[in-house]
Length: 359
Image (tube, rainbow, N blue to C red; front, side):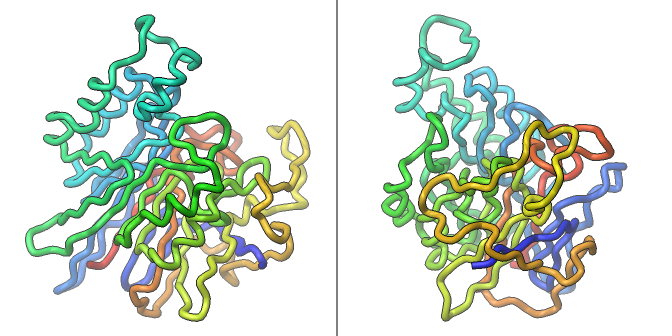
């Protein structure tokens, strides 16, 4: 199967959704939420992989954070991130953990805390009660923060408005010995427990969708990719693979349950000469034996004009469409430098992605 090369875009629009991947940093900010008589839109602001750092976050109705709240997985780091999230103005803030958030994954943490490469304030493990207080305590509730760990949540952002459903899971296939990991052979059983919702929030990506690493390995979960045909969320938000940050809109076909391969075009420059910042030649490989045919078996540009910044699609979509967003904010890969300077966390090219959906 050919790989769809996703060209650089700042915005993807249609009559029912607007996805803003980049917007001005000079104070003018992102485009306003669409306005039309009799129509109601919900604005989702997407974060992932902030790793205890803070960045400018646009206002919106709903904040979604797809995990890796911390870097070393300590209680101190978690407290810092949660205080930042508490202060944000969004009506609803839904978060999950990720593989870096070891203090949140108590089963893993209790078995491994002595081996963690972190600076601990004491000789003992950090208390689970303090973690739960930060994630689900009175301050979190007052700040409209909802922490999900393999569970569903429903909400409205206005009286009489649409009831949105979201399922959040911190799990991702083992990529080294990290928290919230699972063996790939167990993926199908885990994914089968996910209910059909409007929004799917996972830390790890599905296989072949914005999951390409710097080492050219596809780190996503095959079971998750296979299960999405039944789930068909309107919006699937993930992170984990920083360098693959981006968005892809997929229209499901009744006669096909298979997702395509979709990666950022800048990551698919197979014959690109290494830059001064790259220490060695890029090598193409797969992370395991699930890959099927080679990644570079064919590349198809998803747009005949890859240089354009905004794609407009005037066709009205039905419900069988999924917006896939790798919302990683931590700069990595070929987009991590602008004008010779390294981009800061949440900076240009790694800003919080904004998705406006028509109710």
